[in-house]
Image (cartoon, rainbow, N blue to C red; front, side):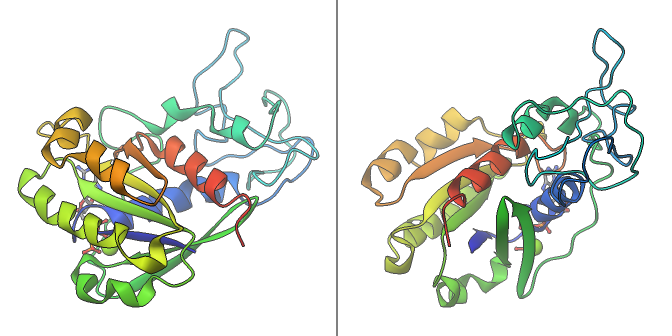
Amino acid sequence: MCLLLGATGVGKTLLVKRLQTIFQCLGEGDRGPGTRLGGCSWCDPGKGTQDAQGRGSGVALGAGEGAWGCRGRPGVGSGRRPLSAAPLGVLDCPAQLSSQDGKGDLGDPPATRPTVGTNLTDIVAHRKITIRELGGCLGPIWSSYYGNCRSLLFMMDASNPTQLSASCVQLLGLLSAEPLAEASVLILFNKTDLPCYMTIEEMKSLIRLPDIIACAKQNITIAEISARKGTGLTEVLRWLQDTHRTST
Ligand SMILES: Nc1nc2c(ncn2[C@@H]2O[C@H](COP(=O)(O)OP(=O)(O)OP(=O)(O)O)[C@@H](O)[C@H]2O)c(=O)[nH]1
Ligand SMILES: [Mg+2]
């Protein structure tokens, strides 16, 4: 189980929707040789960038290339670029997840509403990973859900300095919670597409992140992302895959 926590409005639900979009393209099993998909630039060369031979930069899996197969139109084999090494090879095309207009190749950001309870989402990266988002408004009872947590995604809003200190207090509470002592932690600084966002260096110094990491029992990784544009989601996927590779 992966817990996804953070103050209300930081972008947790949008992140999960974005990950779902990517996994629906990449994570539904190998369809075998000759399989290529339409739908998004992750799997449709026609929508991706073109290499020197005019082939697209979309990806498709050949036989036995692992659990990151694409879903979509079968039998359109020409022009596909087989992966040399699955599954991480699939994630070597992060540029397609980003664009300047806020829509990106992931399409328009879907609408979200404040999560007043908990959302469970399954993604498949070698094995099933269940992401449990807890609404920010549930902060007082987050601790009821700490059991069976293998990994923790903690999201902060990099564009909101006034929320940063409150988020830092929440983070310290999580890191000191006994049931989460063994969890791997990924701190996500989201909304880096906004003009007013703070750089990772600014945030590190504001919340004394190096000290927090040094004192924590957990293995902590940090990443700057934009759930809106898709920036940095490749790293999130890699981290999830690596963290849950051997977990139960
Ligand atoms: N500009 C920008 N807006 C974002 C980003 N991520 C989320 N948002 C927007 O922020 C708002 C809140 O996003 P949600 O995903 O609902 O936030 P949440 O963390 O799930 O909030 P709760 O469910 O209340 O805890 C929505 O309008 C999103 O479209 C981002 O990376 N950039
Ligand atoms: Mg939500």
